Image 1 (cartoon, rainbow, N blue to C red):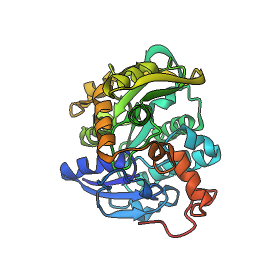
Image 2 (cartoon, one colour; image 1 turned 180 degrees about the horizontal axis):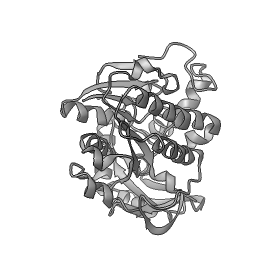
Image 3 (spheres, rainbow, N blue to C red; image 1 turned 90 degrees about the vertical axis):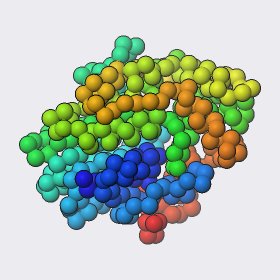
Image 4 (spheres, one colour; image 1 turned 135 degrees about the horizontal axis):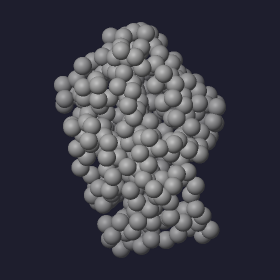
Length: 346
């Protein structure tokens, strides 16, 4: 297939693209390259033909001729979404729906959207399935719900959207992020000896390694149309739901000479949900996730050892998405609409 991957230079995209290439697909990327300076270690993003463009500016010419779109581009987490909620809806919601509309007009049959378990937001302690009610508590989560609701209406005999609601990601990537719970806790443990919790650790959170997350996109792309047409899938493993404090304890066991410590005044996080992700493995035979939180923490620990990670590295603006954006704005490289003031970096 000829596949367009939006956000191909991001945290997940840099892991997904090699999988698609290995499977024999003709892959083109589309990315505004906000995080080009956030490369971790020696491995960079894979070199593929690419359209250097903001997803808000996509044209029919950019989309014409593809068999499928895997849509990852967008503001990637709650802090970024809170920076300017209006922009969050413009980028994450409006641009995503417009991309789907263009794809449908041009006969691009498959549109796989990177949604999120954040859709469930302030959930309950019971396991949530794809049929559970949405209850997003942040602009990021709300924007994902809005895309699902609007794009689902476009589904017909010629256009098949699929919605992958991924759990909280973790794991090593060429565009590593430290604003994700396991990545962050392991970095604290390695650099300071403390597994540092800023909440009280009681909320539930499903987690998924980025390789398993990327595998879900490949599995959806390869699946027979009748299995994925206008369907939503929770992405992860049913057993990979943890309280945050349990993740902290796993990290403390993996990283030598580390211990769990709570920040002064640590309070509950209103985002609380655990997710039943059994449907995707049942419906999509190619989806066989392999990772566990413990194995992921070990992978991260070894990667941090290899590069000699320092506290300033992961607490600074290079790898933390919100701080990186603020740095680019303060330097005058991005405007307040998150557009490059100069040409998009290649």
